Image (cartoon, rainbow, N blue to C red; front, side, top):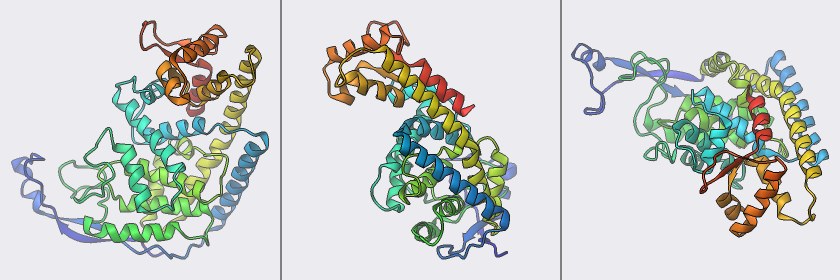
Amino acid sequence: MKKFVTYEEREWIPQEGIYYVARSKRTYTKEKYLSAVISDLSDVTIHLDTETQRLLQDTIEELSKLDGFLKDKGLFFPMLLLRTEALSSSQIEHYNSSNRNIALAQLHHHKNKQANIISANLNALIQSLYQTETISLESILKVHHSLLFDSNPEEAGKIRDVPNWIGQSQVSPQEADYVPPYPTYLELNLKQLFQFVQRTDLHPLVVASFAHAYFESIHPFSDGNGRTGRVLIQMILHHSGFLDYVTIPISVGLVKNPNNYVNALNVFREGNYNEIIIQICQAALNVVPKVYHALNEIQNIKVSWIQKINTRSDSFIWKIIDEIIAQPVIDISYLVQKFNMNDQAARNNVDILLNQNILSKMNDSKRNVVYFSKEILDVIDSFVI
């Protein structure tokens, strides 16, 4: 097995004024460290072992069946799945918040840092799936900018120009678990990565899994590499045309076994790509039953709402109901902006939904009242448990 990553010695020179280095450590920081050098994997030959081939085929069949199910039923609830993907992908990086607070952050009503970070992850996902251009460095920079614009604007959408590392010391890379390529290699590494992404001789699931591990090995950003790399998986599956009607929240499965996932990324650098394909496929398969269950729950809720409301078929309230499924926490200004409707019309429709217990008030203030659907939030909460 040929290693994908070799290492070169480099000398660590700390940036004065940023880190304090204790006197006892100052000699130590002058020592050499090993920095990754990544092979050109753009045209690598891939041979899957029997176990991986079998799992890949099962995953392709189940995801294709799910995509077809949504098409046949005329179901289209992408935001439910995107929300669960964004939350679980963020949880892998130890960011956590309730779905209610994340929805509040979407309205800019919540100042909780972690809720805002996860909301940004959701925005990055939405943006990535509706991009029409070819997957490229430019498109991934847009995703990264959306991801970090609020939490780390100085680094948002920018390739790092300094070394970084994973694990151990926050001061120097000498004891790091992994030191990604030196900044001068990144332009070439990323060019080769996106050449690989454009390959059509491999199934999109293989491309997505391999490209994700490839991206994480390059680690091109100072922050947000894991979340951006998991968005890349979704971009490949969507833009390849493999999945048209479903965005499968793979991170829901990955977050259940983070050690196995991290190990798969580690052994990829040794040339073992089967393991990351296994992890991505298994995570996707594990979440398929949850998707069916959640979509069925949402469909039943929507039917019950329709039965409660007696109004014209062209009423705005039906559009608002669909929007509540996508954004289960709303306020009047959100509806006014979303549907270009006047304030009073929005209030009249919300009153109908309040009277039918479809919406509830989240607060009792006379201004800036926030409304929510407990039923939809419960479905999303149960999905990620």
